[in-house]
Length: 304
Image (cartoon, rainbow, N blue to C red; front, side, top):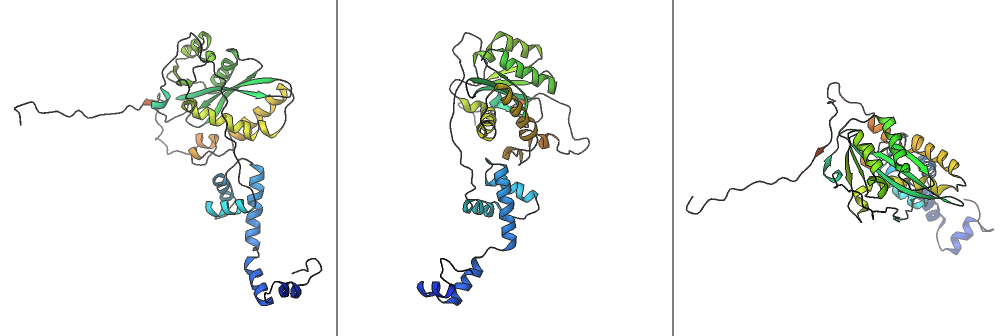
């Protein structure tokens, strides 16, 4: 123990009315071990590399590096080192549902999704650049949370979500029977968008007004994109933003970002999980889960 401020250990113990034996015993008990310092180093490296991961996701990453550690201990160490992520909770709406187009009922909330390309969810958000606002449209596969199509534009015309939809169709080649879910904004209810979905045999589904949580998977993705990529650096041009958004979606979100709803796998890992030979059924549309009831026969008057 080195001297502090010109005071040696003996003098500090005298001033604190503590014996040297008690001081050294306390120091040995509180001094971090080499193993704990190595663990802290790993946690700090992972927390800095994944700034918006909570302690549960960090625990999974630490365990992947060979450490047998509980979420409770990781949370304690992250709290001591001031590494726990702080989340801002904010919802911004960009939906214009005041239109005369046909709207469709919400089918997504009743679906049992068991495979890719059974349910796609879509949404639009805005991104603020240095001197302008631009808009991002995305399409996600609800089964794996994978971003399968996206597009950027300076305007909110139907061509923006239509470009994201075409990108998704090109990458996934879905079969008829796919359910496409979105809000009831004018872009998604427009004739051009609806006709494109109908031409590929898709079934339309829309959230009810004032219920953004009915498209919660897209809302969650857009929040993640903004917190972990867009808000992390300033963007000057749409071209610069497009490059980094594409890199984030393709290289980070789809391939390595862990999702608690997927058992802490990334979308790519979830879709490529090994399965037993002969256990993969042919692709089918998602099934509807409807509430059941039992008809109870009431005996007629005069019958037992």
